[in-house]
Image (cartoon, rainbow, N blue to C red):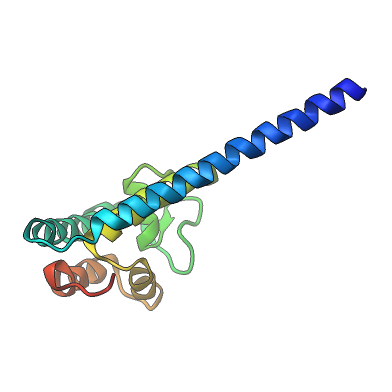
Amino acid sequence: MYWQSMAQQQLLRQESSVSQTLRTYKKQLTQNIERYTHVPNISTVSQQSNQVSSISQIIRTYGKQFIQIRKQYTDGFSGRCVMGVIMSYYGWDGKCITNAERRLYAALVALRQAGISKESLIELNDSGATFDEIADYLDRNCGSANSNR
């Protein structure tokens, strides 16, 4: 019994060590992404414009596969909000919680690179804008002159 308890404690220490290492790595990765996506130069501006149209295109076309919902990413079936659509584009099935974190991260990186605020997308979605209206808004208001970072 004593050896089993020691083995469990050792496993817990290793697990928390791995968890801490992953948290540190994630923090460093996030900082690197933020550092390298804020460099304002001509290629970045052009890239942002393309990324905005990519995000609006995802919302406009990929959103057609889902019923638009409000106040939550998914209903667990075929309903998605605008963020749920983007996450699904990056591979989320709308159900798996562990898969959701990675897909949310991919969506957030894409939004950051395009200079689009996640909060503004959620606000548009939850205030009643359709997927097409959100995509139109991004096409009109984001691109190279975006200040929603």
